Length: 402
View 1 (tube, helix red, strand yellow):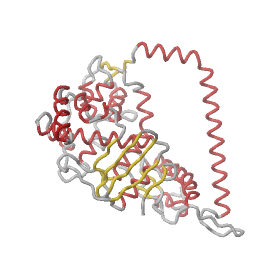
View 2: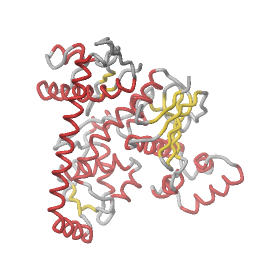
View 3: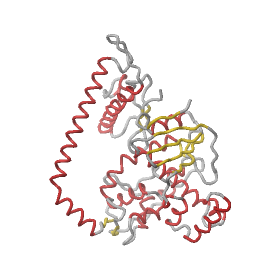
View 4: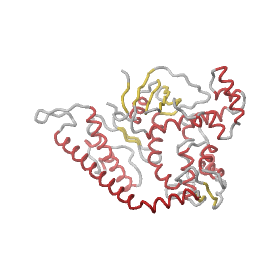
């Protein structure tokens, strides 16, 4: 059976969960306006992500030039060879010894992850999964488990707002306030990659790493050390992102951590700061009114959704139970109710974390703690919600595959 539909009915997280759990192979095609992304999946693992409308700066060769791994002249020579041979530019660069195999693997993984995580910002679009065998280069590609992609995607969505408050623009530069302490040998040893870890490359772009010091939400680790070395006077966030080879999210998070811990001070361009102050002084009344209107609208919508969900629950419609001769078996209605129920469960998870200092190992622990009933763990589905506790950050909570 073909897997296709719209992202409003079946989100990217649910799609990747289904494909990953069933260890399917094929290509997932996603469209949103003029943007098209094609994700190659082998046995449930992401091995490649390509954007049909990829801008020039997002192409592998351009990324390597900005990272100062190759020169513009070397890229142009490789592109000329590509026109004659129709081979991938990355393979040509490695064959010509312009880049090492390790650098090619790192940049290919970065390009893939940066493409995939754009999808978590999509609010609409269509998808279609084309099952079949997928060819991929095992020498330059490390497969990413769909489960890992989901956890990382949710982590980025959660943390971006905090990061943006500290790093408001890619034009921001930094002033060093103090040097980093020397890294302890045991920390470096703990970060050494394991040869049998299928997600070793993925961990470098958002996985967990040993902590050295904590701030509000900050830790001092390998990414912070790499970024601190690049944060020289006058160098913008955009350039640091290019040189770090960590991607925009990880680089900005490391910069925010360093600012939070007092190692760096963000310097906003004078023109931008003056414009922001002037705009704020001019329309602060409008901002307050708009903010109040949004709050009232949000409260009204939340109340309406809660009322509808309560009514449906009382009528027994969500379970397809007969009530005055009425039966509802529409899967769309179940998905609607599931969104409301997931928010209730997430609230229970946060209460559990506040009371006990950590998230539960399983959803059943919420029942044991008196924060949920057994029916809450599956309503309005027959199967229980998918839950997995992440090593750090919020856990993964998704509807079951029906």
